Image (tube, rainbow, N blue to C red; front, side, top):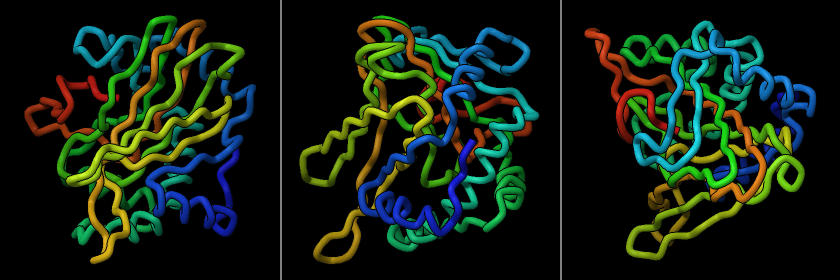
Length: 250
């Protein structure tokens, strides 16, 4: 696992603020990727399994990790959150948002707990030939972190064909901009969770990001999703998701 030093991450953060996404090579080793894939069948690792076709989200399957999160997932989540805080603060200023993001991930988790956002969101996704993921956002509850991570666990052209990561950027009163990203195994794509501020003639204006996966035309494709905010669960125990039924977003 390779979490960049703050100084070396600066150029990636600049790209993220400019474009709404960036690609970091080699965050996980090939061995670490194979280990995550091999654990997919271990039921005890997960709190929930979602078949995407059931909710018209596409075709494929994903599983949410149970709490307490596995050590590597927890370290990735905390380490990258603290790298991304400055970018998140800049995002908040450009968006004229009142959201604040504490420097330490433990403080961010505590703030979420006070808002009943307690259901962990990191997940692993599996696609087989013919599967795909519709464009969507992973948002639930009042508070969300502006960015999230997608880590490729499989190698395009070797483990699977097709299956490109698709990002769309919807601009006000303009046509939507598509982005196609092809990460190698172990690479991480950081994407805007919901909105991205773009520079205009009169300051920054808001664009809307969604992400999905093109159809897999052969083989199997696995990826890891690291979402920094948790899902909302009210005191009565009912979970809430803006994109569909409980535990069906990503």
